[in-house]
Length: 386
Ligand SMILES: Cc1cc2nc3c(=O)[nH]c(=O)nc-3n(C[C@H](O)[C@H](O)[C@H](O)COP(=O)(O)OP(=O)(O)OC[C@H]3O[C@@H](n4cnc5c(N)ncnc54)[C@H](O)[C@@H]3O)c2cc1C
Image (cartoon, rainbow, N blue to C red; front, side, top):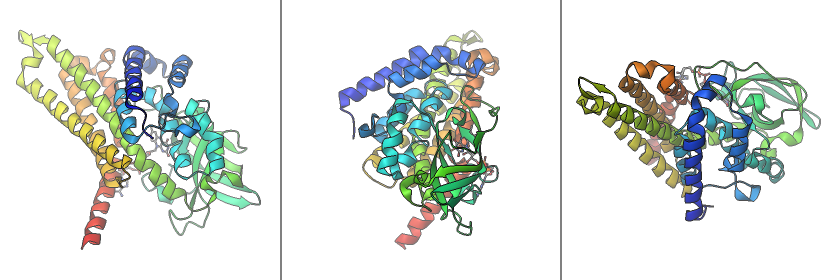
């Protein structure tokens, strides 16, 4: 259910102020410390940011997709590590539960996820199963009123702090890739669950991933998401489908920030006796970035509205993820170029953004996987129309 328009505008303005006045000044410090302070996490809780997409009946704000992408545009104006704090509770860590959980499971976890009292993670990727997620090898064997999980999940965002994991494991023999995958809601305290060491990454310092290891990990049979085996792969694909729009919107916000920083720099930096913004070759870079980020903004909004109206936007969401994540990569590259040597230096923060945005082309489905998805849907549609 959409918020009242005035209420939503108030929320948007509050998030905008929080991002620009509170978070932006902390960017360099957070990157250096590779840590987001507890008080910032608490302020995010106080603002209700953990429950943006969680339905109101479970204590969240229940934003529509269009409202959510507007908030993601705002969050994009600062380091992605901040978004990551609330990212899994709003996205991949809660959406499986919202879409396919039983009433009992929803009431047990969603209110705590909405307030940020607990943190959730989405554990699909494995050492041998990334883009080809259906080939996952983690197993879950039924043993009376329990399941026993064995396997390793890799690169799991927020796993070092997570209280709840949505874990995808094979409950069948593996001869039907995808169809015998079941999703489990596994609490951190489950016996046999352990964490690997925190991964050292290229960017997004302050946001953390690690392995999640299951060694004869016992969970009650009631942990099966939705109560039915074999539905896990479908759930995972639906969750990722939705997440693509949020990530795309965040890419738009980051591109807009980088363009604003580049323009401000170009207007004050003088060479050959004039601001570099007067040079047409610099103007071309600014204009290309502006046009491309505007295109991505329009795509994301149009797709979000169509989703809110109940349409199947699988192809369009993949188009958004592919275009917006590649677009912000180009914008960040131009931002470094416009800043010249300063763009390469840590002090200006541009090189950090350049590294930070690289991830968007990789996780929640690489660019190549989006291309495959888009083309496959095109062929399917054409065949159905023939
Ligand atoms: C920082 C970070 C956070 C992450 N967070 C999570 C998380 O919270 N939960 C989770 O489950 N996963 C997470 N992941 C994993 C992420 O989703 C995967 O890394 C991603 O899906 C790619 O899988 P892979 O790394 O195994 O690469 P691979 O699948 O091995 O791909 C390698 C290359 O091959 C290409 N490729 C693969 N298949 C094809 C094909 N059929 N045609 C053409 N090209 C192809 C890919 O596009 C890529 O360029 C995270 C990853 C990172 C880096």
